[in-house]
Image 1: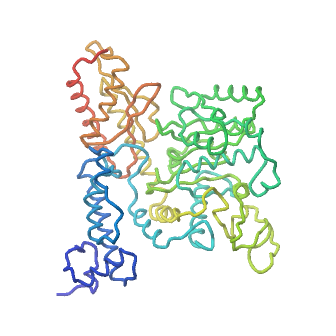
Image 2 (image 1 turned 45 degrees about the vertical axis):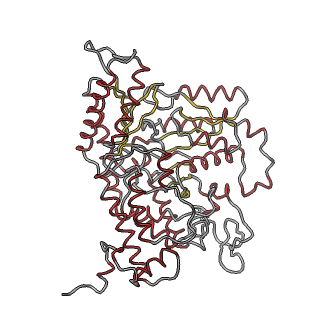
Image 3 (image 1 turned 30 degrees about the vertical axis):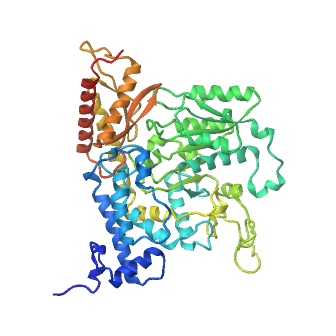
Length: 549
């Protein structure tokens, strides 16, 4: 019999089957405890974890999508004191299998139609382990030389994708919320003519800060409310502008609000466009917003956390016409780039302004304090011609000087590997398929006489409302009763675990929300979901009989 010398190390081995006195088991336990270990222990522990990951991913379609779970029950499941001594590695793996897996939302399943949580690319999943093993802190070039270069390259790809000029730059963040906060901070700096590089020379903003106003759709993400508070502004300084029939910002209402604020002696600072709302996937008219921002001398920030990925598609990128005129753009590759959490970012038209806004020089900073046009190398600064593209091109970049975060994970690694492995064309095909499946969902629901489509059905989101009908076609129940029935329908499907989708509020009424964001999904998965919804609705109607109208 022949075989490889390392066959006993290959995936699929049952690592817990050895005898208690097996030296290999002892090595695995030392590795799990963080002690010194040779490559055999590391490999076997790694193979065991890979097997566990593969088992989870391959088992998604064979189990419930969610529930039934309760917070109290889960607290009891994990109730245990901090251990005084280490737990055997085999037991830890079994705990993941027996306690963690059954109590998770099956994100990645073709029956999951929830929030913007994608089925992550396997390459990106496994690259997370590599990222953790290298443990690079991309706050500083010295602590992550290749990691910094990788992030710079990924940022360049994204800036080019969105049509930003050569001088643009950006930074990866943990998500869209932090990117949106950063965008509003940049808007404040631009309008008040201040930045961190000369904060000591600037007088406190005081009353000037209180006069600033910010404008966003009523359908915008909650992170803007957090941003206003974190930046020391009053909630009233964020103007929530009404939306039109397609849940886009009402341009006439926006222009009226800006004019009213100017007449009141206030100072419009930032217009925010949404490229794909969480509720409906609606896209504001970005080209019109860009023109209005220029006219009002406002910073123009676009939240493209969800819809930004349509720029990958030649077919659909015109949906975001005008985004190339933005001063800053929020992106979230852990949505439609199919990255595992976390992987967000902000792109800024003027990369040097981004740097000046967050430029600090702590005492332990090992690079010489440097001015634009001076090299960072050697004992003495050597004058060099200023790079017209900005300081961040071709020199050492320390990303803690480009944003809010200090210590930073190398989140760009998984995106760099994935984009290179997949390519834009395949990404575009996946996004286009998701959009098409959401439209198939809408078409199927329109065939149901007691369901009504809501929203634009623009991206991968389909909103609808269940409204049982009488024989004459009129509404059988009141709006309030229908609200309750829609919540009950979502709850019934959730409890039975056949699928998962959410509900939301549109025009003051409960609506059901299906989001397609899974590169593995096919039309048969949509047909199955429609059947699940239909059966649940029929059962509820039978159970409810004739609720009070």
